[in-house]
Amino acid sequence: MVVPHHATGARVARHRLADELTGVVTPALLADLVAVLAELVGNAVRHAEALPGGVVRVAWRLRAGDRGPTVQLRVTDGGAGAGPRMRVASPDAVDGRGLHIVAGLSTRWGVERDGLGQSVWAEFDPAPSHRPDLVAAG
Image 1 (cartoon, helix red, strand yellow):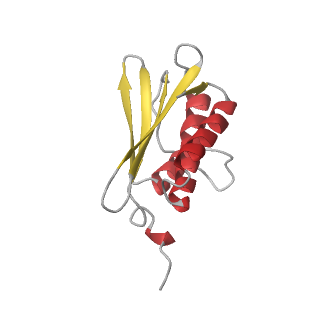
Image 2 (tube, one colour):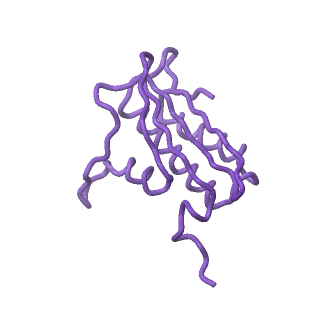
């Protein structure tokens, strides 16, 4: 799907993802997916150029597995002078934590560049292994 290269793009993407994956993945995984997608689209809007037409491309893919679906999120934008990187944010900083959130909630993430721009992706393995801190104690 494409969303505007504007703050509203993150809202549109979050709602569409939640609508399509509710009941398909666990509520805990869906919450992580929504949070990470919001960060990735927000970063694309704040730090990168738009794709032609003033948009950002957003995609997700589910792959079936024995323990549940593996999900990949991908946000493609027109690129920026410097690629995405994790920053050290002081406790008083109002930003700089987005990729830490992505890294903390996803199983793995990365960046791919081509002649048209860049894609930032994040993958989520099936619960509970991707978030062992959320496993209920017996």
